[in-house]
Structures are given as structure tokens and as C-alpha cells.
Image (cartoon, rainbow, N blue to C red; front, side, top):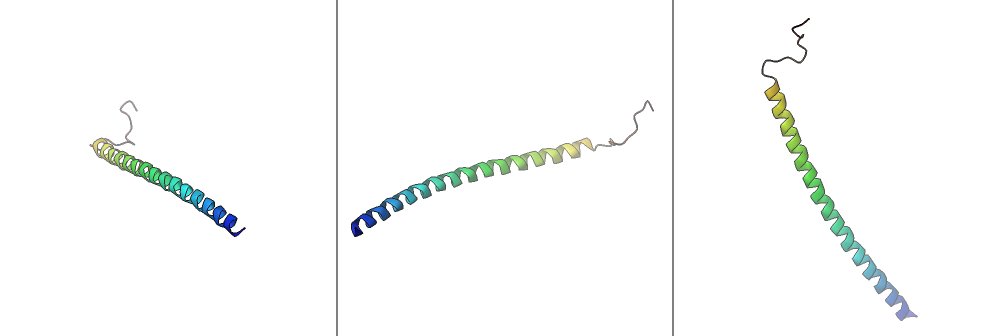
Length: 68
């Protein structure tokens, strides 16, 4: 009976090690995805800033059109 319990514990430990490895892989993939999203956000933020500085060359957004 004691040997059966040891075998059961070894089986549970093996499953836990496998699950831990799978979770570790998933966390690594998620971190890579987060890094890519972070880089994309930085790139988009830089583009927005450059467009806003290019577009402010004396033109006012609230300026009345010439036909009024």
C-alpha cells in the first residue's frame, strides 16, 4: 500500500512538471507578443506625433473656410 502511494505521488509530480513546462512556454510566448505590441504602440505613437507636428505648419483646424 505504501508503494502504491509513492507511485501515485510520482505520477502526480510528473504531470505537474509537464504542466509547469507547458505554462512556462505559454508565458514566454505571451511575453513575446506583449513586446511586439509594445513596439507597435511606440511606432504608432511616434507616427502620430510626427503627423501632428507636420500638420501644424500654420494651418488651424478651427479656421473658417474661405467661402463663409
